[in-house]
Image (cartoon, rainbow, N blue to C red; front, side, top):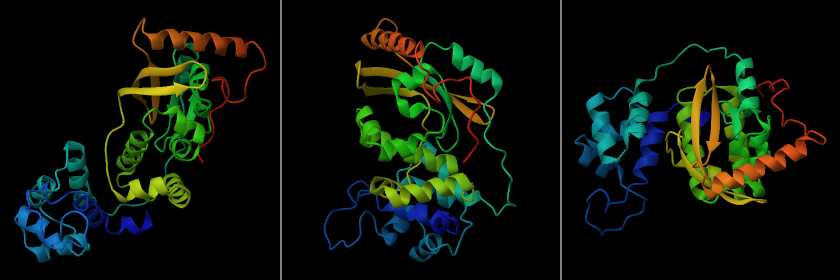
Length: 290
């Protein structure tokens, strides 16, 4: 992340143009193309700016393009609304004084709410650290215990890879969401630590991180494979609570997945009647930020 922080706009433009094929941009095939995606001069031509000016943008020698230029580049690079907003934000970013961030904190009322929810629910931080969870969440996946990191587990834990029906899509969504969350907070120690760790340990992460994709990972639906009850089709909602996120998973009422989740709840209740598993309760103190 340190290499990107000095020229984030140029890094983003370069990564995005490499993902647009000539055919997508309406350029006739042919010629000896030695670069993936579009050439710099092709982007400049399609955006209506000079090749020299576009080169200065990519190399970080001009960091103040006009909104009109950015809108033209967003059109050529076929950015969606979230990606376009991200591009405009990169150009608008200005040097700022270092900020001291307080540790992510789960309010007491959220711990109480987790204990009463009959569906899988947990609290995550900005870097996908699990800060608190209820027994149903841990029954759904042991990787939802407090202290785990969802992105690290998704990329490095074979059981978590088997858990997601569409693992390639899940990894792409999570990495793009992390980049969106980081925004201009590139010096945040937790983000620096996580990106550094995953860059060293996961080829999949390195590939996705280099694409500079950004997207929101809010509500939606997913299918997961539980080793005991089988496939579950669940909806996901993310609800902001102060500076953390409450995540809940729930099935369609009276569906096959609803029945399986009730079975899972019964199994979880039977386990809780014996020796409690460390970290699966919402009654303990939330972990401190790493």
